[in-house]
Image 1 (cartoon, rainbow, N blue to C red):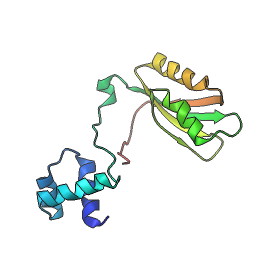
Image 2 (image 1 turned 90 degrees about the horizontal axis):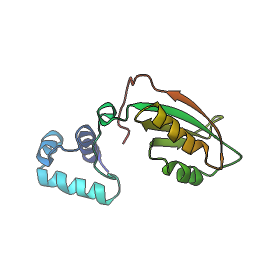
Image 3 (image 1 turned 90 degrees about the vertical axis):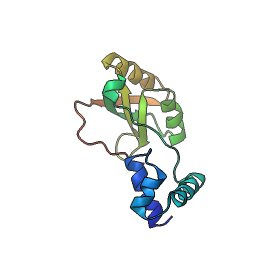
Image 4 (image 1 turned 60 degrees about the vertical axis):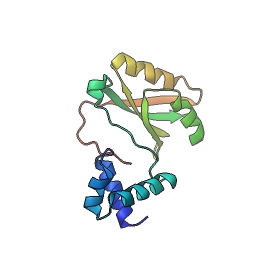
Length: 145
């Protein structure tokens, strides 16, 4: 991957629907050269997919919380992945350092939906307890990938 590829990725992060010609005019390549590079980035697994971002308040999923997950004993990340994959309201999760085993981002339609999702997580056999913080307002959101 070179600086041209990085430039293409930066432009696709800003607008995944940008045309190859538009990208090419910024990075100094023809549309066909940009297409070949994008195809290679996809084939090499650098670009894992193209997606849309929907405003959660319009989509009806405006209630969100960050949840610290505490497990009994040692639980492998694969087990946490299995547990959390079964809860569709979980939109992001990762293992962390510190006293919690994982941080989980949950998005639901309302407080009762959030409570139901939390209950699904809490009922998992290896989960000891959770600590939640409900988001009041979003200040910054940047796409990480």
